[in-house]
Length: 88
Image 1: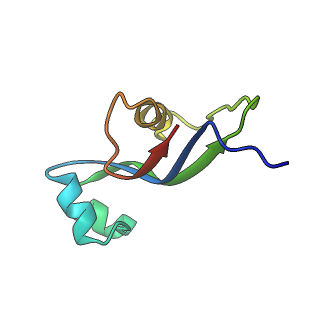
Image 2: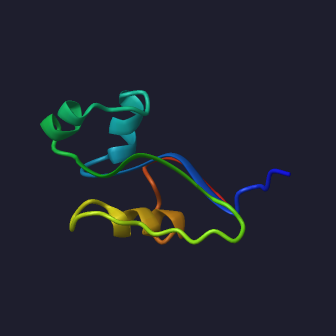
């Protein structure tokens, strides 16, 4: 029997810069790394998809500055993601 996720996100993005939503939509929800950098945006979270099932323990690991805290803040809705979906 398959269990439904308690927390999930799909294609989650968080960009920083001037009008990140407009930039994101202009690039059809998938700006390249080159476009992002050339236009002065910072990709804090890029196209993250994750599912947390009942009873699971999840660890978010990465180097300093890799977007771990930003991802957790988007998941907890402390900050709004630029694109993608968060589902509880």
